[in-house]
Length: 67
Image (cartoon, rainbow, N blue to C red):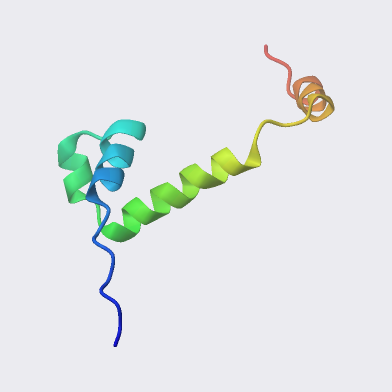
């Protein structure tokens, strides 16, 4: 017998979309599950990469100085 599926994590999804992303309710509720999942993947990707190493940051700053 297959175990029952876990309930949908509405609290976490709403906290992410409305809180972390700052989407207004109309945008959040109009988003499709695929759009929300893509936003979550993109957000996780940014967190997982971390900050660049100091030498890489200095090289980027040298290559692209502020005007």
